[in-house]
Image (cartoon, rainbow, N blue to C red):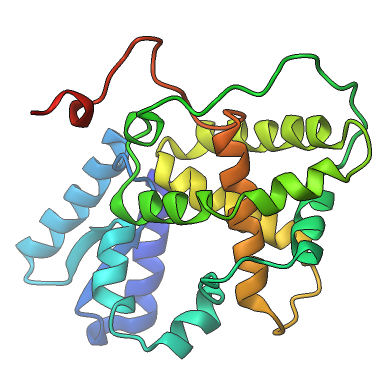
Length: 238
């Protein structure tokens, strides 16, 4: 990473020359850059300040949003990131596509009953207001997913739950932030289910992916549950 920072800065400086006033290393690590990478940026900044040169910065996803994206209109944002989810329940055909995208390998069904969502699971995972709102809104729609599984082939729900757990574990190890993991999981499910990249029914497709992900959040397949007996601050507040 330190080599990339130095190389990218050197290339930008050669290409833009005196026209470049600011340079930022943009990253998606919500925990912040590793020490050596941060030191490299600090060294570049100090060297440029000594000669009255370029402003050297590092941008988190939030900085990228505030600097470049928050002023774009909805059409421009949709072009870059896809349509936002629909407020209506997705059709069964879209749910089926999401489920089939996860059903890659035949597995032997388990015998354990599905656990109830423990109180405080959302708070325990540290979800922000945006992710919390999505989960709570789509909890009301997951009956459509259960309806699908009630009529699916035997073992399909277990098979899908195992595969989504594997996907979750991989994203959790990479991203280390519950909000980023949830967003990435929904995007991955959506991209796997709808590979045609068409422009029709984008909101319904997004909603279907959210409904399937929320269903498996409810069944405790993905994300961590609070310790047994734990209570949230809201539950004990007077």
